[in-house]
Structure formats: C-alpha cells, structure tokens
Length: 345
Image (cartoon, rainbow, N blue to C red; front, side):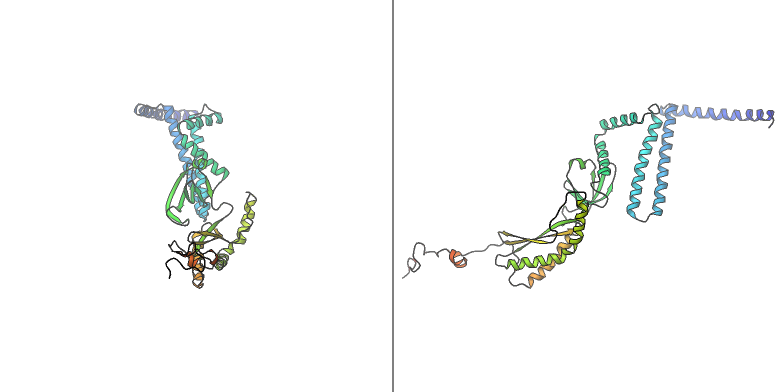
C-alpha cells in the first residue's frame, strides 16, 4: 500500500477514534456524577460482574452436560453440588484479584478476608467450618438416617451453611416419616450429639415387649416368641455378621450374638417377655408388625397363654395362696387347727 494512501486512511480513522474516546469519557463522567463512583471503581465493578457471569455460565454448561449424560440421580446431585462449590471459590478468587491487585500474596488476602468474616459473621463462619468438617470427616452422607439433638431424619441435602433432613419420628411412631423437612445449621455438628443409624452398619436392635398373665404358661409363651423372632428376623443374621465384620475394620465394634433372644422380667400385671432382634434401620415398624401378627395367631391357639393388661383383682390368700403359705381365715387367729372359731356352737 502506498504511503500516501496509508496516511489518508489514518487521518480518516483518527476522528472516529477520538469521537469514541470522547463518548466513553463523557459516559464515565456521567456515571461518576450520577452514582458517585470513579472510573477505576466502575471498571472494577464491570470486570467483577463479567467474571461472575462467565463462571456462572460455565457451571450451567457443566450441569447441563452432566444431566444429559448421567441417569443416576445421586451422581447428578453430586456433580451439581461439586460444580457449585468450585464456581463459588473461583468467583471469590477472581473478584478478590480484581479488587485487591496490590495484595499479590494469596495468604495475605485470605487472612484479611478470614479475619473480617470471623468478626462480622461469627455464625456463618462456624457453619462454614461445620461444612468443612462434614466434607472432611464424613460423619454422615446423603441418604443416611441420622439423629442430631432431638431431631431425626434422612439426609437429603448438604450445603455450605446447613444440611437438610426429611424428618422421622416425632408424633409418628416407629421412625416413620412425618413429611416435614428440617434445615439444620452445620454448626450443630460441633455442639449436638450425632447418631447415625446406617453408617457402616445398616441394622439396629429392636425390642418387642409382650406381657402375659401370671397364670399363663410363660415358658411356652417364651418358646413361641423365640420361634417367631427367628422366622421374621433370622434371615438378616448372616448379612448382619458380614456388616459387623466390615465395620470392625474402622470401629471397635463387637457383637458376640446377633441371633434373636427373649428376656424374662416380672412386672406388676404379669410376666414380661421382651423379644430382642436385629432389623434393617428403615424396616423397624414393618418387622414389628409382622412379628405381632404371628404372635397373636400363635397365642390364639394356646389356651394356657393370655396377654396381660393393667387390672385390679382381689387375691384371697387363704383360698388362693400356696398351701404352706396361706394365712389363717378370719376368726381362726390364735386357735389350733381343730378348734372352731369364736361364736361357733
């Protein structure tokens, strides 16, 4: 291209560039006068918004690809939560770099941010620490049945500041769902006892109290209860033994006997026979129902066994007591066996 032509083009473009610069400066002056922000601050705000938008779009793209390629809901959920955490951290780093270019040291940046958060946002910081603890130690995972404090349920979500449970128990008997969703701050893992129904060992001990009358053949009743327990719960013993063996590699767990057993106790209203058996953590009510139905059918066929309940009865020791322990009838006190009571002719 001849030099004269190049010079002519530059002279023609220059006015347009100068006009664009003038327009940009005018727009910047207008924004500064309207919102009170300097051009440098305006540029940082724009850069921060662009950075957050780019990170958000990348995460949306990742989630969409994962949803199309994965069919299992659990894996999709894990990818969604993991990408959200990565996007959050990346956005914090990018925005921090934009606003704090003078702080080249990442340690200094994190230290200042951490100190400010610890002072101004104590509870959220503790919840964040609880979330880190949950990711690190994993006292429970998604789908586990847990109890923390007075609340119990199945874990359905874990977030930075709280985790969510589908509640069980409360006014509903035998650990069944109430339909309520409970949001628990992560900080509670540091202050409340945490019980896990299903971690490593997916079985719990359940007890079924059966009260029979004193006049019943309690030994026969005990044999029936043990037979019923072995029919209903005996099938889980082998799998439970394998689960105990796996759990013992991580925890000091030892059970000498996992088979059903029946204990005998005397109560005010009769003889209490308590059936103790293993059941899957989420099948406690179903196993108890199956066992009770078999017990009722078996007791119906036994004329010498009756279920007891709180009653009032008159016990006449002279007539009903043991022969060697009977009290003397009224009027015979102080007389010999052959002497008639006073007033008898």
